[in-house]
Amino acid sequence: MKNGTGKDGSKDKEQAKRARGRGPEPVPPVLPEGMPKPALKVVPRRAGLMANRPNRLEVLVRIPCPPPPAGKGRPPLNLAFVLDRSGSMSGRPLEEAKRCVAAMVGLMGPQDRASLVVYDDHVQVALHSMPVVSSAAFRAVLDGIGSGGSTNLHGGWLAGAKQVADHLTDTGVGRVILLSDGNANHGVTDPAAIEGQVQALAAAHVSTSTYGLGMSFNEDLMVMMAKAGGGSGYYGETADHLMEPFRTEFDLMAALMGSRVSLKVRGAPWVKIRMRNDYVQVAPDTWMLPDLAWGGETWALLEIETPDPPPTLILGRDADLATIEATWTDETGVQRSLGPVEVSVPLLLSGLEQLPEDPLVVQRSGELVAADFQRRAREAAGRGDWRAVDALLAEAGAAAADNPWVREVLEVLA
Image 1 (tube, one colour):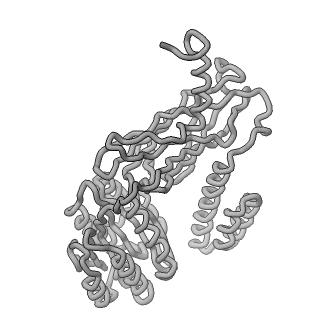
Image 2 (spheres, one colour):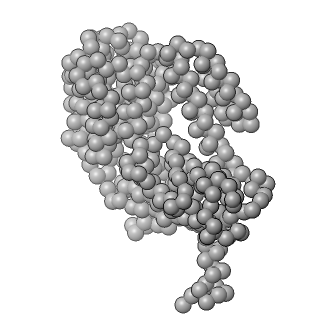
């Protein structure tokens, strides 16, 4: 039996198509076990598309997660702290890295496991993976670590990954926490080879986060490893700069709702899709997204480019641009799916500029613009090209004239 006013339910179909651009209803469906699940929502920057001309439409994909059920505990953590003790870390960077490790171990408990790997040109498992009954053993070993020789970063990371892999469970979080200046000069040093292995271990449920210390760390390598490893990437001159990110990462792991999140975007034949975030692309139409956290939100910003829309589209009717769906793995190791959700906006002959812009899409777009300026400015500073840095800051300031958040970021960057 069909609903709607027409024989084919055309009224309901049209309403459903318009709703698809806004995502599903606010009330999320539930898992078979009765647990709440995340939602998949898509929001266009402007709800319209111009006929007879090319278009660039930003679309925000949101995966908001519900708060944790009452009484829910956090998943057990299985962490390997990999500490660079090479000569380039001598002095303050090494001492600050040791402080960071001690701080995170102090947040762990008997339900968690931790190991400690130290490396220069030689790799040593200083403490094999063990339940964190007390942080005293870790503090004692950390106090005795001094600086050494060259930097076998890959070997140290790989030893940490093995410690995690040997104790993986279906319900825990397995992660390597790498603290280094990233200046690999011993063992495997090819970034592409390292990236491939980090990505393969991430697919096997051993993720990687990187913490760059000092003023001369290899940002490209460290950020690449965090990106490929499905973790977080931070840098700072001192432990004080990294202590807040450490606490943030611990909180995110403690609130883990789902991991191995992938976003699949199938565009209409006449559109081009670009991912604005710096996410790993694992297939022509699929990207890996950050983990899901209870009470948090994972998001991605897409840019949909349309050449002249095909003449088969009808003015005033919705144009179907793309279909979006996501998969994620819950805490029990079961893969779940979200969607599909269709991105549809009406085709207009005029008046697109008068349509309101969604403020959250504008904000997220500004954040990505600011991040890109930060990356380019740091690269220029690394080359000592201060004229280029000044030009980038001026360009970014003009671009952020109407975005207070971006202006604040650029002031800190300057």
